[in-house]
Image (cartoon, rainbow, N blue to C red):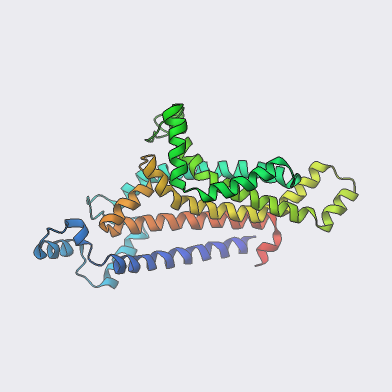
Length: 313
């Protein structure tokens, strides 16, 4: 297990270096001259040249990359080109907002998806199984922003159970924090619930028809213990989908944060992209990749515990 863990840590570190390095060069290639977005179309060539020199853009690109990388490994992502505030400070203020709704959505999807997946796996021809099929068609056909708006209109404007916009930090009020993330979390989790439930249901049905399950029943094991054995063998695929969903929810948080006016990394990404604020975009890329690496690492550990054969790969 130690060698397995070290291999996963090494692969995660390599992924982090490769993705962030590629992002640096691609960002400079895609944006080109960011002074146009920072100063506007009315800026003179002299003003743009002065800003390029101030930002260090007149240096060779490899020199800029090494300077950025040498500071990034210490957690220093430079300063924003828009407001000249430290990028690390801006991201640290917004990460808790995004993590709050993404983690809550992931937990909601995991719990509800687990319950629905097991229930439909035990009764594949039941009413809940047909509801799941209908929900999968409806939810994937509807745009995410439309679902978010419907939740706001129903539960925030009409029923007034939750606030329509805004975010309350957990340190200020636990109840206010919970109410402020409820609707955004539900909006993010709906599609993930269906995918996890379907994946678990399919895995449950596949494992339930295998010979070892019949042997367990023939030995007189209770239905509960047989179900636990089936669930353990059917869970790896669902866990993989859950990890992928977590990464996908980080991207989907951009739309949700805009609709619910949440000051998370999604809204920061949008504003930085509009003006070509490369230091902020690179800092956000590093943070996102770290999240992906950590989630994949935890997934590998869980899969290695559930299925020892995974450790041999």
